[in-house]
Image (cartoon, rainbow, N blue to C red; front, side, top):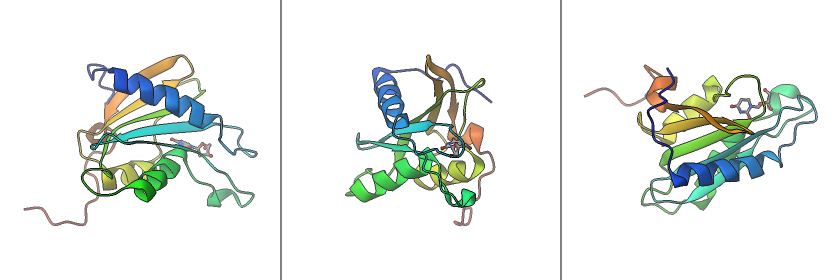
Length: 144
Ligand code: THU
């Protein structure tokens, strides 16, 4: 499923740095599991997010969701809400990938080619396309 051939660019490394900084803001008193995300849109804007938990555990949300929210609030048309590339970073024994719900949220604003990098504090560990992480995705639009 991982696609190591996906190229890492200067842009990917900038996203990694921003995601790592966003991770510092994580509000995680319950899991203590900090996650940061940075994403770049087709128009070149960059948005970040962290996970935000809640005493009523299911009410917390993921870093990916926070970053998508920031993207939508800043969007002004012309590709500014289309996700091209995203980095998710956490400190974990294996590369972290977006949960199922967040894969569907990324799909809402991405394409099958959207690149998702999984990183830890040592750097990007694995890279995927959205199609690789969410095959046969749900889509309300009827197929032509
Ligand atoms: N989490 C994220 O923010 N992003 C992911 O990709 C996976 C999990 C968060 C949710 C929760 O706050 C914590 O990590 C532990 O599950």
